[in-house]
Length: 158
Image 1 (cartoon, helix red, strand yellow):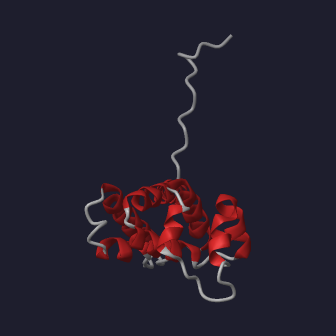
Image 2: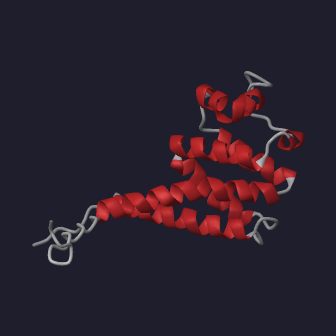
Image 3: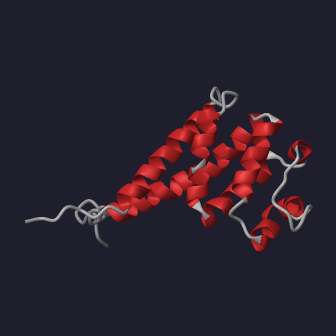
């Protein structure tokens, strides 16, 4: 039988930069929908309709049907085939958990759409005092910068 003190385990391989970046993106991608749900929870109805409209825009029929028991599909196609037209009272039907699920789907379909919410968050005086909104703005800003940096070619070495 071998003695672990005499035969220590080999050191774990250090993760490479690509896997580290991938892990950071995954953690941020998981945090964004949670924070959006928290922001939605404290937002007034007018801001809620803006958020829902932004998140629903990129999603197709199947995604809208699959999210939150189809509540977003019913709202989207209520006035079909016209443009998306949410009403303030629609926000009474939607809770934070449904918004989290919608944000997850929207983020999978179009990260840029979710990242564009940063502008909305910074322009809303009502949401400016929300801790969740401030944290979300920082995360979205950092994620956008990392994504831009990920597409930049490294400088050539002579």
